Amino acid sequence: MISSNSIAKSEQIRESAIDFDCWYVVARSTEVTDKPIGVTLWKLPIALYRDEIGVVRALEDRCPHRQVKLSSGEAIGNEIECTYHGWRFDSEGNCSSVPYLAENQKLPRCKIRSYPVLELNGFIWLFPGDSNLAESILPMGLSEWDELNYIATVSIIECKGHYSYLIENLMDMYHGRLHDDYQAWASAKLENISENSDRVDVLYEAQSYYKIDRIWSISQLFFPSLRRLHPEPLKVSYVYPHWASSLGNDFKIYCLFCPIDETNTRAYLIHFTSLNAFWRLHKLPIWFRKFVKDSLFGAAQKMLDGLVRQDVAAIEQEQNSYLKNPELRNYELNRAIVSVQRLIKNRAKLANVQSSQN
Ligand code: FES
Ligand SMILES: [Fe+2]
Image 1: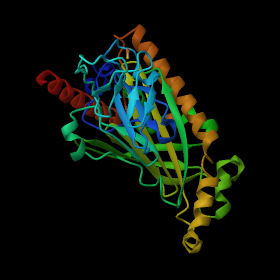
Image 2: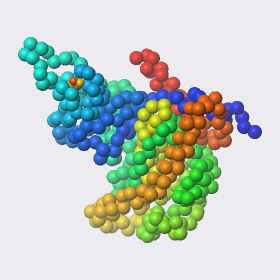
Image 3: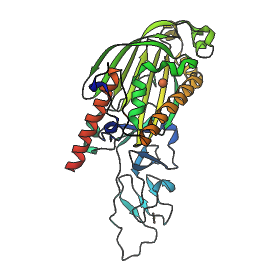
Image 4: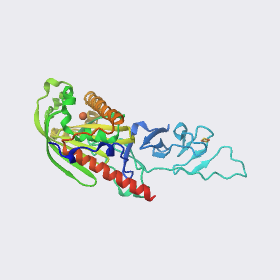
């Protein structure tokens, strides 16, 4: 029998806002150049560009003159120039020049918002909340990104669904069935949950198809016939607002979130294959190890993209069903989902209190 507590109250969760006082990921490093791009983080349009020394800048994506998108303009030195009449804005968001300003006219005092932004482990992290807090709150980062013993693969998730569907999908390891053809993991069994106001950690015992203990084991990523099921601990964590996981010692996977609005989420899934089992690698020259890491970048691409396609299809069905019939209730048996929803609601509540105080 299912208790009333375990029935997810979907109507409260599927419209939850985000807690703005966190570092979100808005782009890959490679996406941001001196040609500005526009991104959206929870309904905030943001223009990103690199200044003349390569530092990434983030401004509200709106020219205050006539509300044209600044991301359609150009980066000039440290500034961004609007495409329409050529007004320029510095990296703090102040209007710094107007090409046709008459001698008797002053520069308009039309400041737009600038956001704390930093480049870390291959991604652009942005703090959309109270910028006074940005320095005291650390971005999650991806410690394996620059480590020579990890091979990375990145897949972009574009999903027409609320971010809660995506994090629930990532925390609920009972959906291995959906990915049977990619042989990701099998037979998950929840062993333990712990939670606090920042995170939910869940331990499953599961079966893994992969064992990376020989140099040729990497070929298991390409040839299913080489895979053998064996038990491994599967740890998944909602490190609000992102996700981190590990399967045994061989794999670590992260998902970096950029919720766009109530029905759209962008995210980056990063898969790391560990080479730590090969202790002799440490004896090889750094340049060679770097060459191996770079050459194998994307080794798990086909699998990762396939998993993403299947997850996104399921999540979008959930979202569509909710939009058509919001009164329908889910029946949830996985305690991890109850914890995840509690964390989302608590953080969204906090965000509401903060915005009502401002
Ligand atoms: S709209 Fe941007 S300069 Fe006029
Ligand atoms: Fe999945």
